[in-house]
Image (cartoon, rainbow, N blue to C red; front, side, top):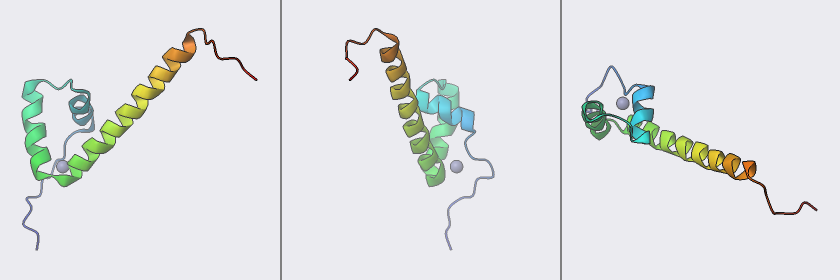
Length: 75
Ligand SMILES: [Zn+2]
């Protein structure tokens, strides 16, 4: 049997997002990091959130770039 401690509450989705965005305050950060050390599930959630944020960022970049006049000629 696995002896992993069961947490009734996982990291809140908003907290996880703040953490991945690097916007969590140090007071928020401590319990999040402690939980991540014990909970592989939330680690993978954090990875997924980071990927999501990465996708969002590159999408935003593309939008910004396309907002500027584009010298590329269309065929
Ligand atoms: Zn968790």
